[in-house]
Image 1 (spheres, rainbow, N blue to C red):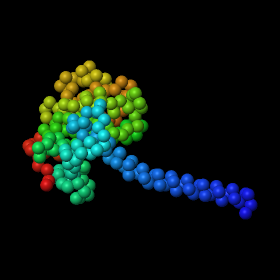
Image 2: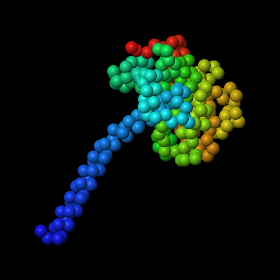
Image 3: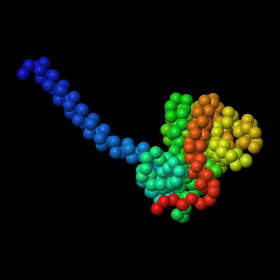
Image 4: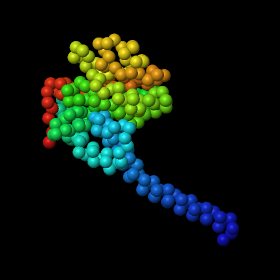
Length: 234
């Protein structure tokens, strides 16, 4: 065998071994990656109902246990009935914070347009069907230091206690003001807005539209909670 052929064979063997090692590593890390994604979403759901402080960093096992003990997920059908998730097609996904056997809040998945891509998170509403208990973001492509502030605790905490109904009881959703709420929004509408982010007007505009669309889509469920206690399926 010539030296040139030996070099080719050696290179081919090295390439094959490296390929096998990379494939093995990728397969081995895939399960860990999927778990990390799931745990991050669970953390954000728990954060939206105040079960996790956004400043704290509990380990994955703690998050999974807390989620299992407090959160139940279902679907909402076209008649606004709560059914087992996956039992039918075209269901709206929804999770519930269950406390002492009763839903204390319901959590809606948020998918909104952003300036540079999709904004994904969760918004939780108290079982009165109108008061926001929390908002969290787990994925976005907004500019760090500007629109990227939507992932910061100071911004998300502004949503706690805000209302999705106006003073007359009509649907109003919740929006991001172009500045400080107290300075730019009339007093009778301030309960429906949070402070905006300086230099991120478009991010606020897009997120406002996205939140309104999501809250309107689930308005039938919210109406059920406003009418009285809601019972979850067994």
